Amino acid sequence: MLPGGFSAVLQATTQDAFRGEVLHFAKRLGFETFAAMLVVDHTLGQSEFFNVHNAPAGFEELGTDPASCRRDPVMQHCKRQSVPIIWDRNTYVSQGSGDLWEEQSRFGYSTGIAMALHLPEGRHFLLGVDRDQPLPNDAGELQRLVADLQLFAVYAQDAAMRLMLPVQHRPERPALTPRELESLRWTMDGKTAWEVGAILGISERTAVLHVNNAMHKLGCINKHQAVLKALRLGLIH
Image (cartoon, rainbow, N blue to C red; front, top):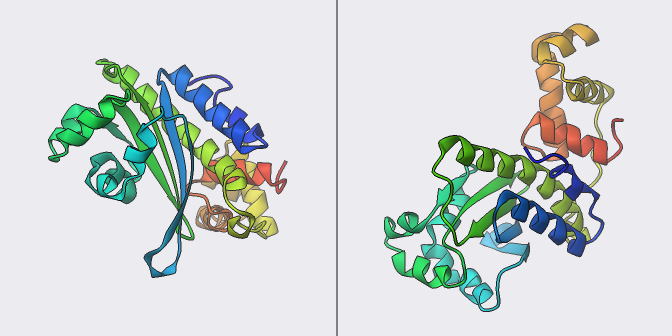
């Protein structure tokens, strides 16, 4: 874990500040380039894209070309899954897209790690870091990089929702019940569902239900993200 390297992105008040925090994180992780993208799905199969990156001149056209995106195994993986993908030349060659890797490697995109968070209401957050040097051979070191990226993505998507989305797309402040708020407060203190139930005089199953309801209302995919968002919104202290 990178001390202080995760929550700082929540303090960003502008898109430029957000971009700077993501770039700072990527560089501390050992990567030269990054891309962070929010996707909002609408009806009729239409989607809107909002992104920040530090791609070198000339690469953005390649990275946003629809035909290339359909052939890009990393993009297709992130479109369908939430599990991070560790990619290199072999990833592209195995999918018959070796020529695409050759093109992007000229810009320093030789290997990297990418992932997506698929959120409620047709919203998605994609985060990727890239570099021109091979990734570590040590499995433990590689696992740490992936874990750091996953944790940072939870923080970054919350800030991205607040700063990158147009006002009309931003989620409204959710109304949580007193029990849901209490369950989140105790979860924040590290209590398990069984302990929360014992404290509140309810069953473990009901405690889980309250936390799950809070997660859904907050548009979060896990309880840690829900606690984080509730804190930022001032719902709990």
